[in-house]
Amino acid sequence: MQVNMLEAKNQLSKLVKAAVSGEEVIIANHGEAQVRLVPCVAAPGLRNWGGLAGQFGDVDAAFGEQADAEVTRLFNDA
Image 1 (cartoon, rainbow, N blue to C red):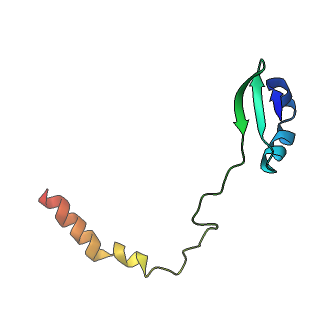
Image 2 (cartoon, rainbow, N blue to C red):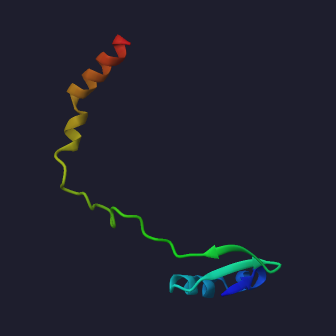
Image 3 (cartoon, helix red, strand yellow):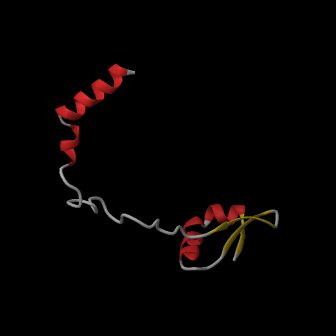
């Protein structure tokens, strides 16, 4: 389906639904195609917050006094 800018402005939600359902939606300006609406594809990877919970050891242990002393030593040697 091809629509002009004014139609696209007035019927955006309808056009988005059409694009999500797989229909090709082209928005034209003065009869010349300008853009195509396509649905977003979910990025691979985490689907929800906390998806990696419990998969790592005690992360807070990496930020203890020993790490602070090492950082201080490294910056004082510079």
